[in-house]
Length: 271
Image 1 (cartoon, rainbow, N blue to C red):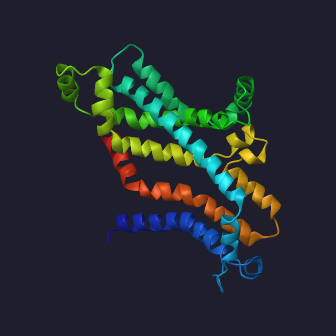
Image 2: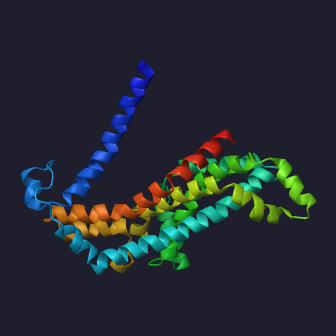
Image 3: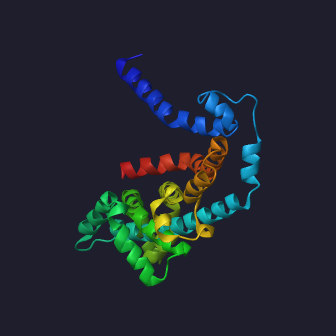
């Protein structure tokens, strides 16, 4: 084994240790009691305790939070992918003055932090009457997902041969027809990639829902975890079980779409 491969394996093990070990600690901690955790924080369950997970799954609060997060994530993902794909189509298949400047503007959006926009965003949402409204979270989340969506989709769409578009035009297909019938189906790997990124990003947002929602019935799962932690501050095991269950939907979605996501990223880099 070469030194380069050894460094690569070492880096991979380090990443696994940093990411997977804490997840295992949270998941396994939910199968223990708080007394067991206090006695041996890094120990394994013995005996295994299922009550924490069963109580969380049996609570209406958890399912309400899950539904709120799913609704907002689906809306944000649909808006980001829908508008992002149309913008990427225009920036990749149309030649017009200022095209690269527009693309650069979207690229710079990757560097724009949410914290800077907190106050103006709150005032804008209040004026529009979108506080305590899922759209008040979903629309800004979609806007913050647009830059990465366009940055991935544009080179992917640009790499699709122009001969396909010329043949479609000769067959009487308009530009929009080419976009819907040919370009989007060929861009499925990239669309899957940006969908996963937008969905997971929306699912994990904490500051924006905190800004928009005051009523706990509208909270998303990240806010619900913080609320649950304050309500059960003495029951560490139950908090870990609640946290583990809140991660499962996003992790499942990510794992199921991982292969398509890698294909989309590869295609965008080649483009």
